[in-house]
Length: 215
Image (cartoon, rainbow, N blue to C red; front, top):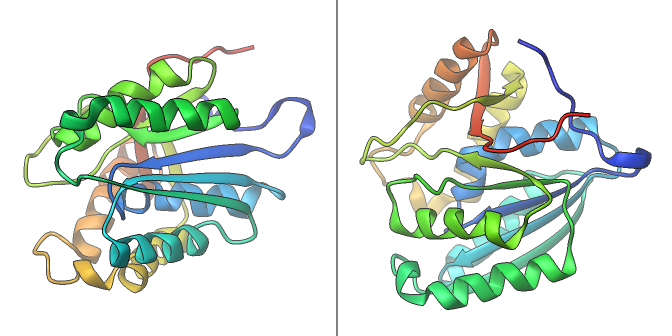
C-alpha cells in the first residue's frame, strides 16, 4: 500500500470541510482523522457544517468541533433542518451546501456516504459531490443498526493515543447519547481495530473516495 500525505498546494495550510447530517456524525466517523490532521498540520483550517440539531444538541456539537480540532482555525455553521426528514427538504439541503461552496474551497471534504442506509446521511452524501466538484471527498462510515458497513478504499491510521482520545472526547462532548445501546468504547474501538487490520495499522478510520487526481 502506498501512503499518500494530505497536503495543500503551494505550502499553504490544509483546509478541511467536515459535514454532518446530525450532531456526532463527524466525530463518530472521522474524529480520529480530525485529531490526527490537527496534530500534523500547523495552521489547519476547518469548516464544520451541521445540517440538523435541536439547540441542546447543537451546543454539544459546537463543543465537540472545538475539542476535535485543537489549535486549528475553526468556523462552525449550524443549521436546524428537520432531523430524519432531509429527503423532504432536499432543496434546502442543496441550498445550504451550495452556499458553503460559494464561500470556502476546502482541500478535503469529510462527508456522509451517498450509500449510507440512513436517509439523512444519504441525502447529504449524494449532494456533496454536486456542490463541490474540485475537492477530494472522503465519504465516511457510521456504525448503526442497519448494518450498512461497506468496502472502503481509503484509510487514515490512528495512533493508540488518538483512538482512545477520540472515544474519551465522544463521551465527554455528547452526554445525551450515553443511554444508547450502541454507544461506547467497544463499538468505536472495535470498528477502528477492524479498519486498522485492513490497512496494516492497529487502529484506523476508513473512507470511500470515488475520484482523486494524482500528480
